[in-house]
Amino acid sequence: MFIIRALKRVLSFVKQRLAFAAVAALLVAGGIYYGLRPPAVKPVFEEYDPRLAMGTEMPVFYVQTDRKAVALTFDISWGDKTPDKVLDVLSEYNQKATFFLSGPWASHYKSIVSRIVQDGHEIASHGQEHVNLSQESKEAIKQNIQSAHDILVNLTGTIPQFFRPPNGDYDDLVVLTARELGYETVIWAVDSLDWKNPGASYIVERVSKLTFPGAILLFHASDSAKQTHEALPMVLENLKAAGYEIITLGELMAIGKPARDDPRGRPLSELPGN
Image (cartoon, rainbow, N blue to C red; front, side, top):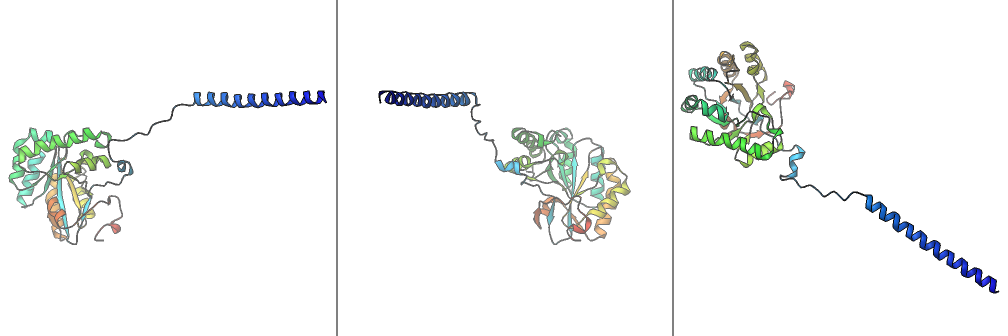
């Protein structure tokens, strides 16, 4: 009996030691695991609204309207030869348009800016530095828009309402930042491609073919667009013959609802009015 009790004590002792060893092993293993595991990554909070990454903020491409009207717009960021030629054509046809002016150009060619205003055209902003703003920080975008704004207000005595980003490049951050500064971002529905200098007849045919009620038309009055003034008379005559009112962007926005779905590249049958 003594031997049996002794064996039981030994077995009990061994079990306790084994259990202790097992627990110790688990604790050691756990310590090693947690010691080697990298610290938890803290969440990153952006400085701007998280909706910016969702692609939900769109600029204006055209205007939904029952009237057969279009907006005639010009971008200017370089040179002093083409602007006067374009203004001469517009004066001859008693036609008003919207001019998106870059800040540096406006500062350098004050007399042309003065003529644009005196001729009764609408002033809009084309920003300061001609860079793709979607690649810039919010602060850089803000500075770009604000710098041009200060120049245009000082030179024209008007407060522009519309902003067209350089190269038509935008993202949510560009649109929202412009809106914070009081601007509606406007792209276009019909690109005349005059900046490619494809020939006056090509420009006329393209614009006549792609125009639809409420469209915003893009032309350039920079010196790089050497055929705009040659194509413009026939563009105006063709559109008017087709029954279109040709007005400024502000006037077009006043008669309809801003449309933020991009119509560029759609089949003609899917465009408004077709």
